[in-house]
Length: 279
Figure 1 (cartoon, one colour):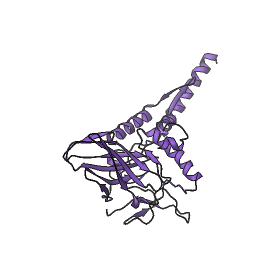
Figure 2: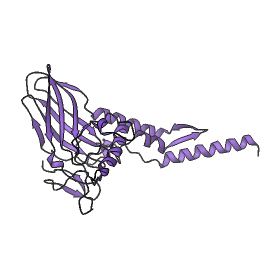
Figure 3: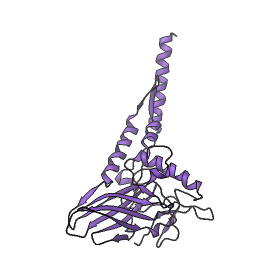
Figure 4: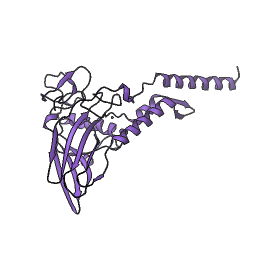
C-alpha cells in the first residue's frame, strides 16, 4: 500500500473518530418542553422611595427550570419597578459574597464558568465548605430532593463554551473544526443567555421590568446590590438574602442536601481572580 493510501486512511480514521465524538456528545441546552416546572415566588424584596426590587427565583445548577445541564452559575430572576413618576436607570447589579466583597454579574457563560471555579478555590482556601449542590440551611418551605437545587422560573445554566467545543471536534493536521451539534448547542445557550440577561436599563415612571442577572456560584450570598441613577443622583438599593443562608455550603455533618426549590411558599476571563478583580 502506498504512502498516499496510508495518509488517506489515517485521515478517514480521524474523521470517523471525530464524527463518533459528535454522536456521543451530550447536548447541554435543554429545550423548553423538556424543562422542569418552575416554582412560586420567593417573596424576597426591598424598596426605597424610588424603586422596588424583588428576587422572584434563583435557578441553580440542574435545578427547577434549568435550561442548560451541569451549569456553573446561578440565575437570579428579578422584578424591578419604578415607583416614582420620574425615569431612573439601573446601572449595575452586584452580589455580596461571604467575604463581604462585591461580585459583578456575568456577561457570558464562559466567564461565569471560569469565575465559579476560581472563587470555589478561594472560598475553600479560607475554610468555607463550598458545595455546588448544597441547599440553604433551614429555609422556610424548603424542599429537599436527591438531585438538584434550584428555585426557579427562568432557568440558569451555563456551561463554558470552550468545554462544549472541545467535546466534539474533528482534528486534521492540528486544525480543529467544531461539529455541527456542539456548535448549535453553543449558539442556543448564547441566544438564551442574552435573551434572559438584564443589562443596564432605564425605567420610565411607574414602569416594571423582569429579567435575570447571572452570577457565579456564591455561597451564602449576603445581598443583591442595585446601583441606579435618577437624574444626576446615584443611589443604592440592597435586597437582603437571609433566606439563602447556607446556599452552596456543605452541612457540618458532611451530608450535602440538594433542593429542588428554595421557598416553595413564598441558564472574568483569567483562571484565577484576585480579590480586587471580584469587586
